[in-house]
Image 1 (tube, chains in turn brown, yellow):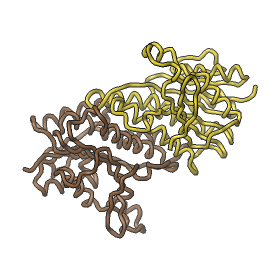
Image 2 (cartoon, each protein chain N blue to C red):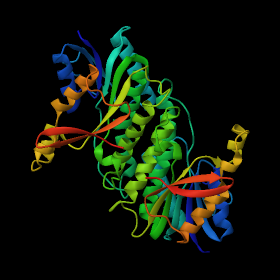
Image 3 (tube, chains in turn red, yellow):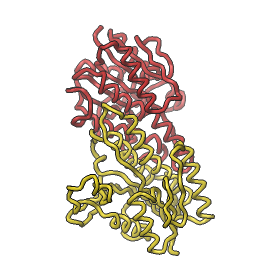
Image 4 (cartoon, rainbow over the protein chains, first blue to last red):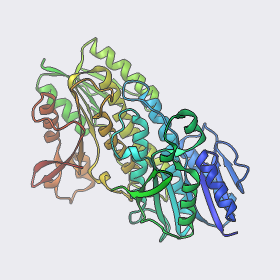
Length: 234
Length: 234
């Protein structure tokens, strides 16, 4: 076994791709999600009923048990979701859902990393390129992703609580090439969508210490004609 | 009566100063807070037990009753709070509190504005200057304020749901000159703190349509030797 990684959102499209990629490269992989990832070495399944603090406590306890004293090379948070909507209808409802799906998971990943990541380890979070600006048609989504972006800057700062020499990097996808996105946007130009294996491959390289971005980087994933470039946001 | 304004957080230090300022200028003033502001014409008191959606529903209902068919010239959200802490301890707890105090209130203010603000009206929110960068020693606070900043950009965008020609402006204080801040930081240089009357005066001018900033502006309140300048953040 070459190392240990934890994938928060390990049963989603991108998360499952990450679990597979690390497994095929001989890593121990833990998954956290609302349902079991059978491919993972340990699968932590959370109830939807937990509050934020309860979920944090539950995750920390289960991760500790799964690791039995070992530490992680990477904590990879790819949990998330999407909801549209402006200020006129269901703003609290949509924003609350986005907060749970993107911010709870990101902040809990930071808590896990502060306790169970190795020195020199990797924490990745998932932001969104559109949230670098205003997002009037998807207000709750934009707020949640903007919070994740700022969390990235905080965690890269001094005395954030992450282990020494570890780095935090947030990917800002535009559109990921998932089967759900193909189903809902069948006429889109798929050559501008970022393949999941591309993203999993980036996480794998960074985990091994190769081509690591600066800590705190917000990396836009810009895909054109099937080729993905990493463009750091200011 | 010259007009109507609603102050979310009307019982806090800055909120109470705003209520007084508008009352002394012959405005109808509504207050929303966890306790009654006796000076306000209508005081909506919220329970701490409400969830986000419930609080939004309750506020919309009570504001509708208080206005009896009239509309607001301004919705002023100065609710908020502060908690420190990095990733190592109580991150979910602190971040959850900050989210409730800053983001729930800001988003509900946006919902109220979408329904009860006049065309050409004013919505103000409260961000924080330090959250323009990472805030490793106060991670939950930074995330919440960054979400408010991005909400500002969203609300200023097309089809955000705010009434025609209305504007949204967010103030980014460094330190406000409140009695609590003087109590906790007795040795600080108060001449760099922003007086509450200064902020209330800005809101009053903007409500009347004077010296209005661009919609979507994030205005840092930089006070030096007792003089406050507004510096727009990028």
